[in-house]
Length: 171
Image 1 (spheres, rainbow, N blue to C red):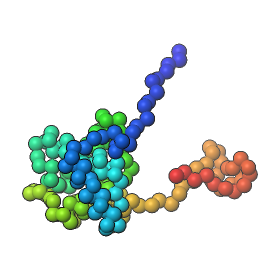
Image 2 (cartoon, rainbow, N blue to C red; image 1 turned 135 degrees about the vertical axis):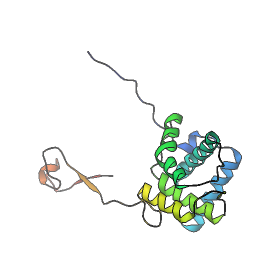
Image 3 (cartoon, one colour; image 1 turned 180 degrees about the vertical axis):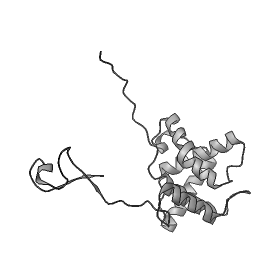
Image 4 (cartoon, one colour; image 1 turned 120 degrees about the vertical axis):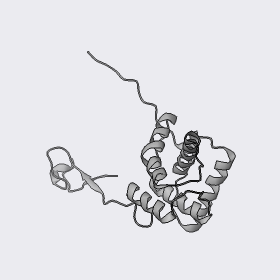
């Protein structure tokens, strides 16, 4: 018996899909300008997801959206953002951790942490550890890995159809 599954719809980028309200759009613009001025990486799709998820989580949990704790960071990176993107049919940006680190630095620079927030060093350390970032909050660049055809060795002449020793990079 043959079964078919319905094709999955392609996931959309957050900025093209999600409409933030005016205060969150201003916050996104200010954070992007700050990141550019300070040479910090910031993905606008990741920031859009972060802002939407923080706002929704604060409303659901009935807490101030400007209260940041290590648990907030954990929940954002491994729970709320993933679930929110799934519900919205939005692609989860790969640079969530790096963008969160930059956004936390922006909030600290603008003195926008609310009462009950953890110190910035604790928030940044938590983000670095959970997202696997470098000490300055950037994505770790991995050396390319090599893909081989089953039964062949990477780099051998047999691994490439043309017989050369070229390797296929998985990027």
